[in-house]
Length: 191
Image 1 (cartoon, rainbow, N blue to C red):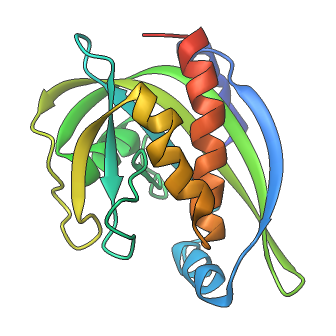
Image 2: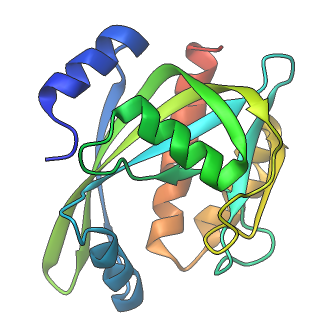
């Protein structure tokens, strides 16, 4: 197991108790194959990061090469087996955005059942707010990330959200759900 209950207890003690949600999405064959590839080492989680600068009300967002040009979302990735959670979150943030971060608040723990033709994979997304402490906003892993930029909270609630919601991709629709729920928590637990 990558993220044990002891690790979750430590995270909650340090960053607060997140809102817990449960949901499910049916995926296409291609998406489900990609999901299963990401599980090659029995991983069943991601950490999603709402990274802001302390002086601005903007959040770092990324676009993957497979996304349409107007689709951006907050970065996410997996903690590696045996990797410290905070170190893994910092690594993912740097790879996808070029930013150095510090985790701030544990906003959401979302349990989602992802399904294709009767096969169901339970997955958990751990959503955090984080502060950018250094670096320059540009993807480091340019094979996985095509672009990174700052987005206003208003953009995340409107244009960028609509793009995710209207996508045919269940994965992007799930990201829209995460974004909506996280922004509600983000406002309540503002940095």
